Length: 256
Image (cartoon, rainbow, N blue to C red):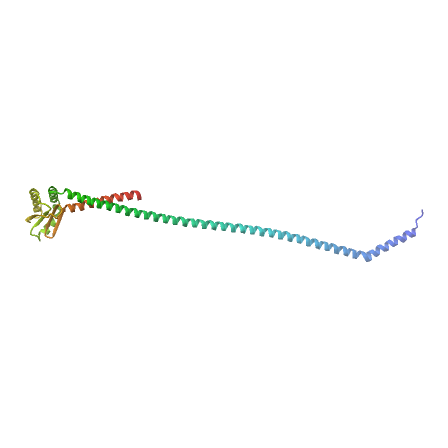
């Protein structure tokens, strides 16, 4: 088989012409289009990357904001809880203080009431004892009781020497008054005792049935009484002191 070299050369020449034409008129626009397309793709990829980065940043910012919001909410909740606890503690403290003050006031009132009641009770007891003592002394009063009182007076004169002497300077006599007449022996002893304290002052004895049993000694403006009534007063005062001491001891024992 023979080769038609003319034809082959013609085809080669056509191909070369075609390549030249393509290169001359189509290659650059194609390359330019390819470059433009690649640049566009690269730009879009850059935009996509930037959008992704922006989305990641936005997501991170959202997460950070959400975490901060949660932290703020937790902090606010804790502050509210602490404030509520503090307010509760304050109210409880105020309530306890108020209750303690009321308790102390109640105890003080009860103590005052108890003290008043005990005072009235002991006063009533003292008054009752006073009446019983006075009644008993009056019921037991007789000449012998007055004699005992008169002899008791003898021992009471010694501490009164100065007072008796001062009163005797302005008196003409001394008067010893009893409810009933004293036995002679008792009268002599009283006279001797007074003469030892106030020498030269006469002593006159008198009786007065309205006077309670005992002896009343008068020298001028000085009057000294040793009667059932005066002894009753002394007895009651003694009883009151004893009762007061007993009341104080009991109050201390219970009240601290």
